[in-house]
Each structure stands twice: as structure tokens, then as C-alpha cells.
Image (cartoon, rainbow, N blue to C red; front, side, top):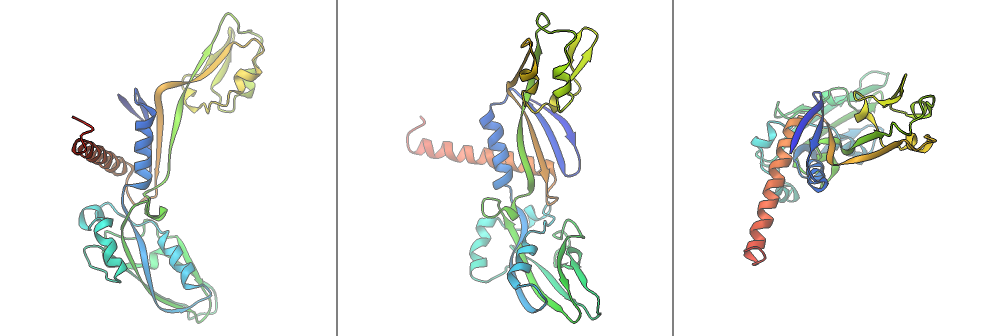
Amino acid sequence: MELRVLNRREDFVELYLSDVPLHVVNSIRRTVISEVPSMAISTVIFTLNRSMFYDEYVAHRLGLIPLTSEAALDKYKSPEECSEGEEASLFPPDCFVKLDLDVSNNGEDLRTIYSKDLKSSDPEVRPVYDDIPILILGGGHQVKLEAYARLGRGREHYKWSPVSAAVIKYVPEVSIDRSRCLPECRKCVEVCPRNVLKATNSGVEVDEASVLNCNLCHLCEKVCPSEAITLKARENDYILRIESTGSLSPKKILLESIKMLEGKVSELSRKLEIQGVLK
């Protein structure tokens, strides 16, 4: 197995995985989406709502605001340990973080309430972005509420998923048969939407710097009159792209997903041994 970082930003990572079966890469992707926990608002208690928006609408918007969760993974109990407390309308401090919202509009103009107006009981669990709009207050309107956030997993609700995107892309392999390629023909270069092919004096060549941009649309194959181009996906080579919501860093998301995947495989192996399937 080989791993290479193709692109990395604060909230995004693109990895080239070589000599790895598809089911392994896809298991990592699915674990990233549905198993890695992060903080999100699960319960909202309204004390006062004199706005144009229903309680359910405001609560839904609050739940979708990503919260910083790096420190929370070690400070708060797991989702499974805290779910019973929530059902009983209890909010133990080792499970929940309280975020207060107490806003009003005493003027005549409309006032937009943003995520920065939420006041968290834990400075390490707060909205990732300050400029997410929650609601708009008209003159004389007021909203007062208590929101409780806890750790959760994407399989319970996508608001707990730490990623906005996690996708796998096939690695393209473009071959040109020089004996068939017509030097004067440039049709494949003209139709390629990703500029993977380039024209030269001797004919057409693959631009190695851009080949990973190929989306395997096969337009080059279709327009080639001499069938000189062959396009296929490399076996056991993939590109994994992960975009974080900001609640966790891409590195933390990957490490947590691999740790959880190893735990699940170990648990499955243990149960199979108990049943006598593995000896």
C-alpha cells in the first residue's frame, strides 16, 4: 500500500491510494461519513419566541450549525453513553454543552441573528463560523432559548457527520497507440473537458501534469476516428477526497475513522471465533 497527499488545506484533503482494494477505501469513506463523532445541537428549549419563525424552524437551523469538536472527543462521553440522559430530559455536564441565545430587536430595522450570538458554556465547543444566519428579527421581536449539544454520529443524523463531502475517484490510465494515431487529427484534444490531452508536432500526447483531472468521460475514445486512444481505470488505485465541515480537521477525521474501522474488524473477528467460525 502506498499513500500520497495530492492536495491539502485546512478543511480539505485529497489522498492518492495505491495497491488498496476498493472495498477497503470505501469502508474508510463510509466510516468517515457515519461513524466519526462530532458535536451538534440535539435539543432546544425555548423560553421566549416573539419572532416570525416557528420553534421547529429555529431548532432545525441551530442543529445544522457545525461546532468545534476536536477537544470534545476527549472531554465528553460517547453518543451511546449519553443518549439515555437526553431521553430523560437530563443534561449531565459530561455529555452536554449548553449554548444560550438571548437576542432582541429594539429598533425599527430588521436584525439578522448569527451563529456568533450563541454563547457557549464551553469555549472549546462553539460555532465553527460566526456568520451563519439563524433568523431575522423584526422591530420589537425577541428570542430566548437554551440549546444543548452532544456528541453524535452521522448514521443517527447527518448534522453529526464531520464531513460535507467524502468521495472516491478512480485513477485514469490513458494509452495512445502511436501506430494508429493520425498526426493531423486533433479531435480528442478539442473535446477533452479537463485538458488531459495536448497536441504536439508528432501527434497527441497525455499531459501527465493534468492526467489525474480526467473524469473518465470517454469522449476522447468516441471521437477518435482511428480508435488510437484507450481509457480505463487503474486497478486498486483510487483518489479519496474529504472535505470537513470545520468541526474536526481532515487529519483527525481520517485517524478516528481508521481507529474505529480497526475496532469493528477486531470485534467481528472476536465474535466469529466465539461462534466457532474462525479457528
